[in-house]
Length: 115
Image (tube, rainbow, N blue to C red):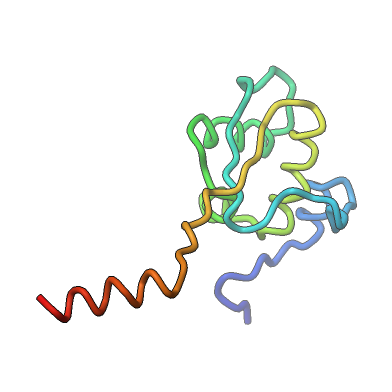
């Protein structure tokens, strides 16, 4: 009996990545990394690489790519490392929220209560 959300053909995933299973500790990709295509898909390109480039025409998170392509995030990260090394995508993390001084926030709260 197959379980929902599981790929019944793990050899397909092995083939997609050329047998690679990890991206290494210096990989810039995590779930929320935004990926942007820097070029259009080229003729003869692996279909998964081409699909990533089409989906990433505008900034797209790694987790969104995995969901759209119905592939595990780990596989997407391996494919993205290939594309990054070839200069076909760029990666950046979303802007972090501003960190505010707790003392200032406390003063604002006191001021609002005094209104």
